[in-house]
Each structure stands twice: as C-alpha cells, then as structure tokens.
Length: 335
Image 1 (cartoon, helix red, strand yellow):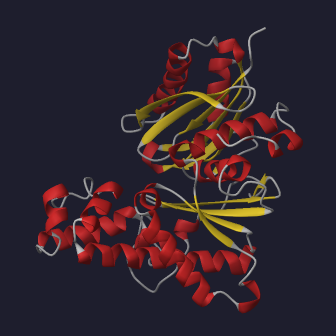
Image 2 (cartoon, one colour):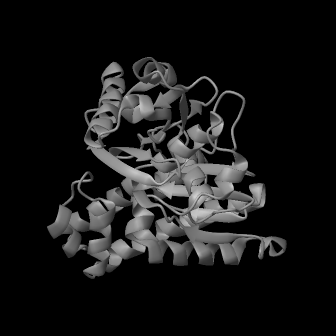
C-alpha cells in the first residue's frame, strides 16, 4: 500500500515553496519558484496549482496519494472559508483559494496566514516545540506576526490577526502602504532599512554596499546588508541595529499583552543577521519588560528556515482534517 503524502505550500516572500511530507511528517521533497510573475489574480492561482503538480511529478508521487494541502499566504485570511482577504503583492482580494485548490486536486485544503504557518511549524517541530504559547515576529520586505496558543492559531471569527507590522510604534510620519505613520513595518522592515542604506551608498558613506548593490532598493537584500556590515560599513550596521531595537520594542509589547512563553525571530533579515538581531532584541526586552515578566519568556531564533511556512501549513492541514491528533503532533520529530 502506498504511503500517504501531505502537501504544504508557502506563498509568502519572494519565492513560492511546495513541500511534500510522509506519514512521519518528514519533508521528502521540496520545489521552489519565484513568486514574481505569480501575481495578477487568476494567473497567480494557476501558478500555485502548476507548482504543486510539478512537485508531485518531480517526486514521482501520484496526486491521489496526497491526503490534504495546507497553504500559507501573506495578509489576513478567513481560515474557516479558505478565503484570502488581501494579498497586495499578489493582487488578490477576497480570493476563495481553498475552493480553487480543492477543485483542482479533489483534496481538503487549509488556508492560513504565512507567518501563522511559520510560527505553527516552529511550535510543532522547531524552536518552540512543546511551548504553551509562542509568538513570532518575522521581518522581511514587510513585517509579519503570528501567535499559537495551546496548539491553536490565534485568530478572529473571520480574519486572522497579528498584523504586527501595521501597529504604530513611533511618532514618525513614515508610512508603509497605509495612512498611519510610524508603524513597525515603516520603521524596521527590510524595505525601510534599504531606503536608509541607499542614501548612505549614494553619499559614499557605505562603500561596500555601493559596490554590491548601488542605490537600488530591490538589490539591497538581507544577504547584501550582512555582507556590507561584514565588509566594514559601520553606518549600515547602525541602521540595522536601530531597526532590530525597534523589533525589540514590539516584542516588549507582545510580552505585556499576550505573555508568550517563547518569542520566535525569523524571516530573511534575521536569518542573514541572526547574532545582531538576537543581541539587540534581547537587550531591549530585558531593559524594558515589567519586572514580574522577566522570567516567563524566552527569545529564540527560528530553526526551520525557509521551510517553516510550508511545513507549518502542511501540519496544520493534517491536524485540521483528522490526519494528525494532538498526541501525534506532540511526537513529531524535528524535520
């Protein structure tokens, strides 16, 4: 008898990732494609379906062996109805993604926010395994947040929440796609960092960065920032550390409001500059959290890397559709 397969998909960031997991929930195959070109409404849906089919073909797995599909998408979603309310980079608004995928594959589909999916993956088999509750802050092009409480993703009746990037954190007038200025995303996302660093490169105050990327915001990516700092661009390091400290204040807010046992730092910026981010966030939290909360939290780096969202989405689907009990979740080995 052929072994059952579980499919997880991550649509966040600059790349789409599809993973296939076996009955032990181990990743047995993965396939990536650039998200760029996946936008434009229906064309994006077609591209998701094509990548899943391509992954199955390359892995030599028959589609009927797939038990369920979980997909993490940027922005707020309706997890019950499988609707993506808003995904700006994909030009999606109120897209019934679950229905499209169920029609294509004849299998149940779970749709969730991409950072929620990543945090859930870390909760089940990553840095926050067996924690009572875990919050995630994932700075990248924007800044996403997620929260898992006793095995459940924190959400509203019809919308996922934890849009921490769109919470106000300074008195600045800088905006990030909304009318409100001074949000976490406008102050500490990679795009915000790149904007500051492009000016440094233009003024010849970041010579290494100027050689690597010039003043092009698209080219000033996480790994380029890390290489710039390693090469001696002190002003770039100052900008990044300031952004990391802002993330630290967001972590303080989360501890005061939701008292997570673990706070996970993830995303491209953290992965490229893990020591810097961990150092700055820990210091800000230690200096500013109320004394009675000093010993109730741990701040950790994500362990699953780029796979976190896809793995978490697949595991959530397996749990939701009866293919994985709470006891089985507790016994999932590290992937």
